[in-house]
Length: 40
Image (cartoon, rainbow, N blue to C red; front, side):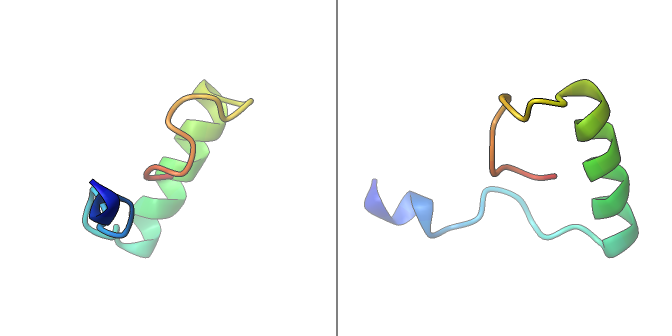
């Protein structure tokens, strides 16, 4: 259980996909309450 925090859940995204994901997350979750710290 303690090692789960150290292991990323997803593979790192390519920079252009990470930017797109961040923009989508900002639109759909502007208060950042859904899965904070995950993906975007």
